[in-house]
Image (cartoon, rainbow, N blue to C red; front, top):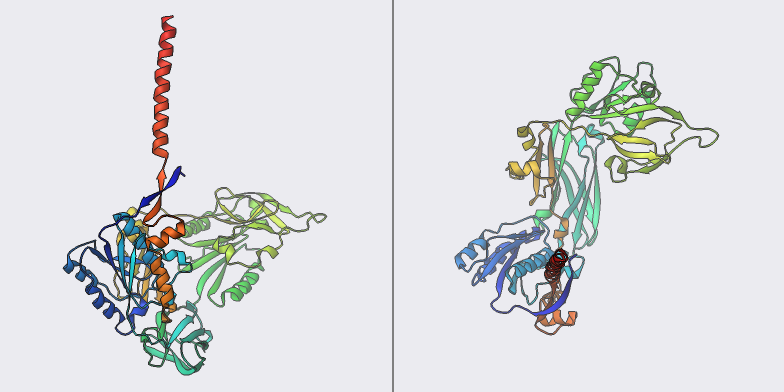
Length: 538
């Protein structure tokens, strides 16, 4: 941190910069709210101004301009959105624009003033110093609304008859009502039920069975009833029907019991998602279209099988290796290259067994696994982790769960496109450069998005608007007045104990300290030179 002290400076005065902010969040689709907001904003498109649209974030529709026709064109370019509105983001952007241009701003806000747009902390609504906020309310003021709040479905189904779906339907500012809730897949009605929704409450509906063709399917849960806002009367979901994925289980030829234990555990945990193909390590299994491979205490592997497994892992496959007595005798963990120095039995006169004492709670494998601390280890292989990441270890520091990441080197042209996202309209959502660098993507509108990975795997994602936008309760006048007061200079000065018309800014000290240090250095050099000159003369 750099040293500084606070000083009082006069707040900039003069002609204000006008900010025309139009709310284009999901709730502004109700009736003609957005059209009314844009029509009213056209009347303010004069003078030196900038046009903004906002939902969960703020978008500048154009640069600061004094051209009325350019400002009106920017207002006309605002389109409906499906985001949740955030007044905190608008206030933050206004502060940034005011500081960058060193001028007070006048904000004209066109919105339906939803309460859900307020942040958790009122301080996040702080306006820039000497800012003026003018609120223009738009949209119908009727509040009753029925909507589909959420849908819970499995992402992948294997047995359509056992699928369980749950839908929650809700209402705000309404009386009790009976509604028909239906499930649609690819435009075809699959289920329907009648449900009674309590006054301003919610009800849960459950459906059993989901008969769909193979592949990714687009579904909706709909609620019947013509209310004032039909956009939230349905919620989308995506589901993929497929056969159970193959798992190759490789065991030592002398071990005949491990496959029984693993198959029972797999059926219990995965609910039919996987089908285990059992083979011994003296055979060459088919590794095409395999979800993952399990090596159950294999011992030493043949060169051909180990090479095949290495290629499988390098190609993006997943491999689980269970180390036991057979592998410990070989003094090496196959495929991984980890070294072993035998195994050790717990001393029955002392500890009897060991348990996991430390684990990486942030790793998905550990985070999603319960009961690890109850596992008892009577014999432990003495592993040398090397470059492997230790996810869990005993109190003695012996690793019991490790992860090794193997990255296949590809050509630059292959690495350039890692993921492709197609938006709800079927257009590319990311450029080629963004697809290679982006780690996340936030959809801006409802619909179905296709995610295509370079491995060939495709995923369908259903996106729904935030259902907090379905509550049209408005902010009261007192709260609006308090928000407007955060930009008044006198109010800001009083809260900070400053004179009216002034604000407090940090004044950095480092330039002066740097100048002082330079002066001392120069003076010291001059003095030292004179001293050496006198000594040489003597």
